[in-house]
Image (cartoon, rainbow, N blue to C red; front, side, top):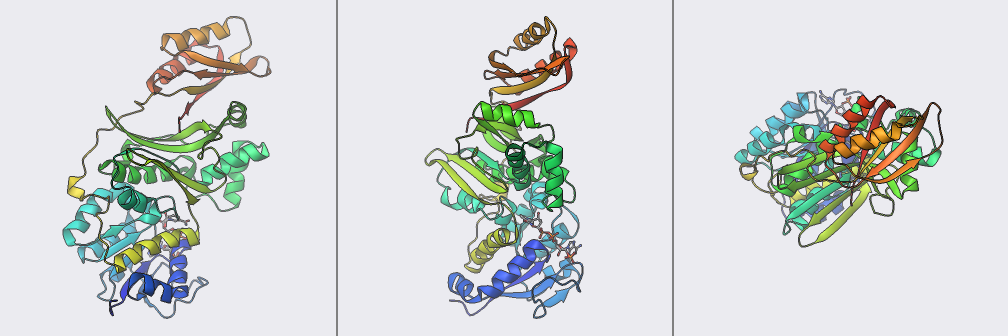
Length: 429
Ligand SMILES: NC(=O)c1ccc[n+]([C@@H]2O[C@H](COP(=O)([O-])OP(=O)(O)OC[C@H]3O[C@@H](n4cnc5c(N)ncnc54)[C@H](OP(=O)(O)O)[C@@H]3O)[C@@H](O)[C@H]2O)c1
């Protein structure tokens, strides 16, 4: 056991930062036993010094400037919990790395945009940069990929990693209310980010997927290559039609290496209701990892909140106290390859919904367009009439996304549909 404590400086005392303070105070002896040395808070930093944070921070030095805190001689590890892809979070992490200090962060936006540069800088200065809490909150998925599954070639990673979207989608099904009503409910409950597009537009979950892809496939983080589609166009009818066919709709991230490059998608998908992903309720997250030796591993747990996120942060801090040193994305940053982005290469069946004119010949025109795009129809469903139109659902056989896009454009030109048709991928999970 070392007689030198590991001293952390916490930048950001919001939901997660306060959770970390609480764990360090509550479990001092347990942490010391597990880490082999004391873990102490040397300093803290946030915007407002006077704010009541519900936890006693009077024992710790206060720094107004997180960058100054990162450089302090008595800080071994910067714990960055401010958030944001740039600004003070990036400046403080860069300052810590430049000073040869280790960094633990929960900031997926920062790593999705600057992960490669930060990983290179950390390795150059002998720092360790860890980010378990940035992906799927309390679920130890980074550890699973970089350590427990390190003997596998990873073939596919999938995840439901935005609890707010899963809350909205599962509540739509349970309450038979539309998207707008549940968006409002999520807003009132404080589940949405200040910019809701980060959640419902799939951006936050896309950040997380890009980090998982990097570790899984040994590639440089490439968030710009993630195909993003949010949940705003999902209607109650889609959820109910999916349920009748034995599916549920999830905002699902999928990353897989194809013959044409790395495919990364974050989009609403129909998944079998009986599958682990299909059974996921409310704000819970799930990550599914497939490897050549292991087969499939399913990790499920709380994806956000004070306790779960602080738990993941502390796991990283304890690893650093133990002296564990793993490259940020599992292999040295200089060895990570720049993957060729592949857009929707892997074919799948699709669910297509449209409002079709209720007149002779309309259906034949749509079927002809689908045929011209090389898409064959597996099933067709029609329920009721909203005269002068009728809602029609097609389920296709496997096809590529670009065939679907061609068909949707062609269907628009037939002038026998009202509004824009909606296509949702059916994922085999
Ligand atoms: N909340 C979750 O469940 C969760 C889950 C996974 C990951 N994360 C990630 O964890 C990080 C923190 O999230 P959070 O929910 O704890 O955020 P939060 O509650 O909004 O807290 C942010 C903290 O950062 C401080 N801060 C903001 N700008 C600052 C600046 N310019 N200088 C110094 N301090 C500044 C704020 O100070 P004041 O308090 O004085 O305003 C606040 O204490 C984010 O990267 C987030 O994406 C959060």
